[in-house]
Length: 180
Image (cartoon, rainbow, N blue to C red; front, top):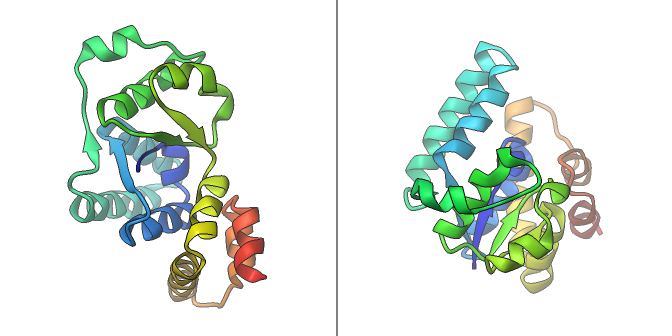
């Protein structure tokens, strides 16, 4: 399965690490576009120079670790597509061009299911998407969660329970599943 990751699921670090952690285990193939990554960097710029520098470093690591993930498309593709928010058409174009099966996003309102279905796509919020993977491979997702938690502890210098970390990252159902 190919999943287009929208900016809103790449930008939060914990969410991105959970998604890409399970992708690295073969649960799905992630895709994105240069514009999605640029949106992430623009958002990180609001955190100041340190936030931007960190995001640029993380984006460079993504490019290195996932060299096949970035997709492009001809302008004619974007011109024929429609979404309620014209600013999101590039996300749909990237999904179509990369032959994605699903767009993983928090912006349900901007990606109506009927419009996505016309392009052979579905939409999933990251919590539901990860829960589906957890139901199929609970040990693998738990292992990724443990690594993400250990990494957060390493960065923050203090131990944070996985459940709290995932809840804060807007993954409440996964948090409950992994903590239970």
